[in-house]
Length: 374
Image (tube, rainbow, N blue to C red; front, side):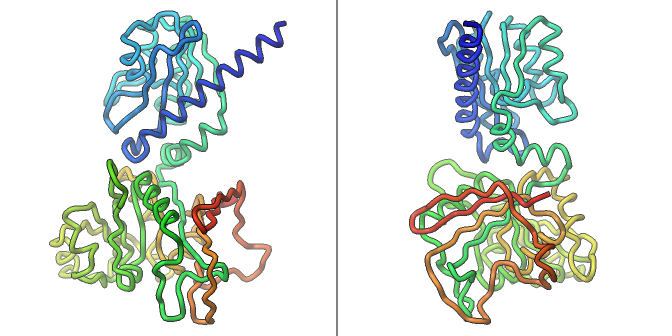
């Protein structure tokens, strides 16, 4: 009987934690660099209230859930995606509020990797006599907040390399034409990624060749990413869409010390920021760049550059995840560009491997997602 009771409570815990994930995702694109968090408050099998962290600087999920419940949550169980915070930041500690509300139990999916919390919230709750159950659907929670986990533990942004290619592995025809490889549904998914991740990065050749806007074109509530253009010598055209809209959308042009002071000022006059970083082996030092972007609270980057930038980022060990759209088309051509070029890897045994590979069909295209091993 005890075994059946234990299984029942485990299933209930997982059900409500799963619901916190659904709520947490509503904060996508609005809470960076904070984590995605949802909360559900239950008493006697009835949901009293629900909430999620809706925007950076706003009330946390637990506080919104308590408000949703009308403030009467004594003796309840609080299910939450992430360990309740234990320090004063932009808002008071959620752990203190749960203690004040005299909840009976807290169930969390994952501990907070933030060194300011890191178990302190759980300790506060237990010291107050509140039962705490940890790590319910922990792997799913870590996946949901993978951007936050990388950023808060390393100070560097989580990098997703994204590209679309034909079935024969080309990202453009031999003439350079690339519009459009993937279908409309796949392109919408890309704009969802742009909305979720704080930054989008390309090389200056992409700006010169394609003249993209690098914004988010979803309907309804959305957020444009920070545009990061790698341009060692300031070659970005003044009449490019990126420069023409730099005053409207946060734009960072990353240069080397070789850029002239005059050109740097010209770029700034358009409204863009200029970030000068060191060079390494004759190229911009991407590791130094990531540290600088982390200091700007840019916690996640969608890498939409060309084949050379893709190779450099992979070689530097900066790419955490790859998202590849494969279209059922073939264009051929020895001169047609492939997704990852550069010098290339000498031996197959040294190939960069992906793991946790998933795929799904989006319209007529396939989307592959994988984590870069190690």
